[in-house]
Length: 262
Image (cartoon, rainbow, N blue to C red; front, side, top):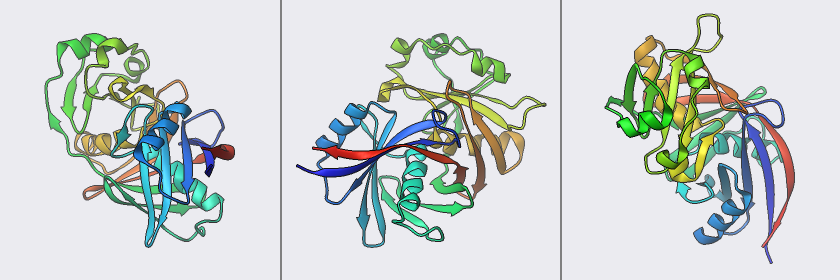
């Protein structure tokens, strides 16, 4: 039997039961991909992260309940939070992760955690009428950057989206977004839907902001943003575009600490 240290962390929030929950498994020895997928399915969270010490940092992998994914921002932030919380890294040390998306890093900056992720270039595309009907939206602009970006006119339209997940299950992930209201502190708001990868609506999605930051850098002619993801749980983050990278900062709160016995 293996004892695996296990944590559940709410990312992109400073309050329990908000933001996006991620499970973190600290591995002392390698697990098979099949076993990691079984654990992720058992957890039934948007993402479960598996982290193991490497010579020059850590190996990091992410799983939804149904598939392994190439990038997950909120679980990376949550993993970094645990490494500093448990004293595995000192506060001044940079976390270095070897992942399917290459080398990622994270730094602790006061009570914020900043992660360095690859920016995703976007291009204008048409989105199928079936997807638009499933979302019941009228876009003012559409693009593609690793997933579909559908911009609508107001934050209220983003909030009011009620997707038909049975239809979206047959399509790629999709972001519905708008610029922030003039009276709002947020530059833009968004929601992310991914039933095709086992997550109907992701509460707060770091990887989607790797798409949205370059998109809004073009639209708003700026490189620094404060953004809100308008899911039921909600979450906010600071963002900066630096060349081909996105610096994404947020808070995290540990909710559960224990052991997996497998």
